[in-house]
Image (cartoon, rainbow, N blue to C red):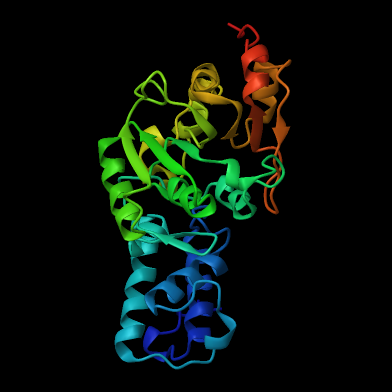
Length: 311
């Protein structure tokens, strides 16, 4: 049987037509997802909605809307670029979303997709009883600045410091902070984790989404993940190199009743092997389990000695 040719894009008229075409094209090309979307369907919908300047969480009302020729051309170009470049869709449209909030992104920063953003939507209610008591927040490895901005929005009484080692990433973060008009509350600091902070800086809440991917996994990355800055991923042999440093540095910068919240991806087993006596609370979301933990200042002060690493 002769192979059927794909439909010509000129025949695609409605949003539904383009959605179906995108799913087929992305699946046929073997694209990899995980930068805010988890499937070819999600990815096609994301690109269509952003291109058409429609609400990112509403697809159904527009499925049978007929597109103009310029709109079809723009979507066609974005689909082709996604397949040909293998770049994450967020880079193609310079946009990423967390809990409905839009942030500018480009290749200078990792595409934001932290579970901490999801957990912040209720003010970390599991571990923070009184959100009004949070007056100083630190965001470690801020990247695009998204978590620092969300912290400022979640805790309106708080001033927020955001530290980042990459000067290029700080440029992106500055743009996002300015977009949200939060320059008076969010301070961006170039620092290697917490080492560049004043010795007397103390915070009620420290959030950290550091690089936590093991070196061997980074070496095997698909093109979509290789498009991101490698320093935003690589966490050493077991993925915990930066996590260890944060746990060592955080006690000096937390208030007496402060809380540290850290995202470590799928490294829970390695973490529990490294810190068998550390009493942490794992914070699960609708789409994750055992990837984010919270620990109190008091616990860190007494229990942070790591187990000896295997040679």
